[in-house]
Length: 385
Ligand code: GLN
Image 1 (cartoon, helix red, strand yellow):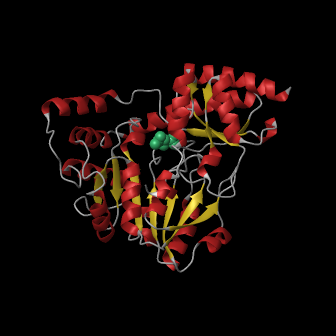
Image 2: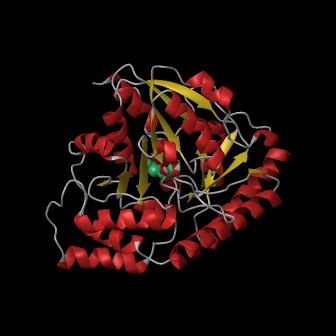
Image 3: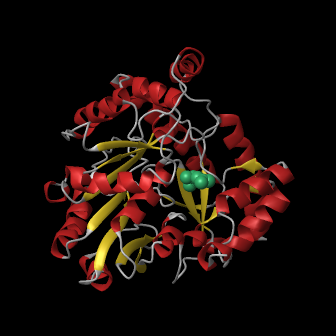
């Protein structure tokens, strides 16, 4: 069997969620909200299953969703996308990432990855024959500098995979960091595969800036989005790709043999949802921000060292002040003895691991967060003794 996949562990999200189910723990690991998602969007999907078209839609996505995606990014990012040539629907962002990586690189090409690296990227790069070059980001700021990029880029660089807002760090990169990365992409003629699935989940009045919004990147950035994250419906697996026609054409060839297409009824519902008015997006953000504040205040009061979260469903805690040196052992012990599942952030590093950061998902009902905090309190007290 193929050595890259044969040698891989099961994804940390699946491992922690299975452990959480087994132990009946409170699952603050894998990122999914307690909330069932907007009822009108779910109803549209249900109606489309019963009354709509259930055969193969176009491999590029149904025309009304492609148009809705173009309209949505005109409204939120002021980007002009040609729905017929620059937009494609995928079965989740992970499929889009695979399609983009397989479509963009040749064996031997170097690909710049930022650690912590969302766990799907590296195996896909390796399977495509790519040679990873890492930029290592460190808490609590998780930023990168010119010197970091100097060390990672070379004339062999073909692509960079960039996740903004960044999971697991909960950082939202501002325009200056995007412009810095853009300068290197232009200088080394590299494509930027931009995982922007958390674009709407940003807090404290922040505005997400898409890489497609940086003028020098309009022809070399691949934007990837996710209806699962936009509508808190993570199981739907409806993703999207937006890129210049010459790039999208090739990714479409890769997509046609990964999944080919995506359930048409979900596409109908997502097309409807993307047109929702400003208030939906504002309220969604405000609700998650409120949960973030509730959970982070609770953690701080319990004496945990919280690394600020600017976006995503996640907040990280530095466990070094508790005398802990191994995040994997900590999470394992935590789920078994405290009944709380979290994600060890070292799982997102391939080298030079950061070993004392643990990620919690706060996209939960107050009761879930409070129950989690009560159990986390016990652990903090024990660690201090
Ligand atoms: N994106 C989710 C997270 O970061 C996990 C998705 C998955 O389990 N594949 O928690």
